[in-house]
Length: 313
Image 1 (spheres, rainbow, N blue to C red):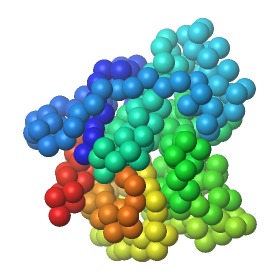
Image 2 (spheres, rainbow, N blue to C red; image 1 turned 90 degrees about the vertical axis):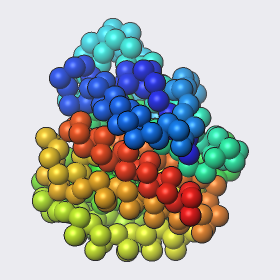
Image 3 (cartoon, rainbow, N blue to C red; image 1 turned 180 degrees about the vertical axis):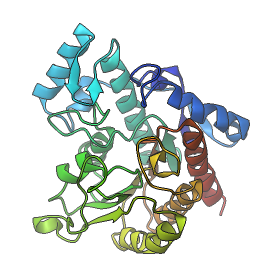
Image 4 (tube, rainbow, N blue to C red; image 1 turned 120 degrees about the horizontal axis):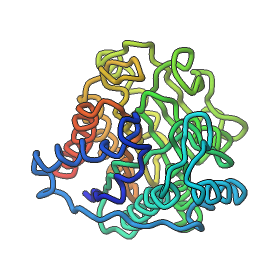
């Protein structure tokens, strides 16, 4: 398993005291080292991305706006996403690390990878949203298609927030299989991901949105998960992306779900098994949200542990 780690990834954060602060990376990394996972994984340094990488998904006009505002070093890209000095470079590092992982998996160097500071699933093709400057998930999908010839991709999202930036970008794409378990949008940002949103046109029935009530715990997750797993396996994906936000665990300061890290462990392990059975060319896990630092450590090390265990089976 490949794991990307380093200060350059930690820099994607909005200052000490912000829910999405640079210390989120170290919450994971310290636990990762304490558990000895550095002896069981190939740890790689972050990789710088390029403007051309970002343009795989985002519009030139939006990228120019980000560049211009980041040169100024202040302001707001949207009501939730501030600009800071170095934000553009930090966002490019998230993208570059994710695309490096994609390439290494497609080339057969490994079968799975985890990028902890990534999974910025709210950004739209033409704008930022919800702490997300560039949508590395969508960029990864486009890179798989345009650079590697991989068409049938499964995207699974267990972050408490609906992955709206990915869903609506590919809502009519029948080859992007989408499954998202999230806190009900009637109660939580971004207010989307209703159960009736199952894809449009040729993609009808190729998307699965599962809104969970506030307080939903492992009992409900494990009751619903077999349907998600069967939906993904039936599609026989050539590649699997898992956005594994830690904000769906009990005790997150801005969400109301009550899962434990057992849900993340099970999802990662099960999806890796599906990838292996379907002959997928790789599984990429992206950290996503999470604002309780202890939960970040628990959820993301559970992801790593689940994949390591599945690799050994």
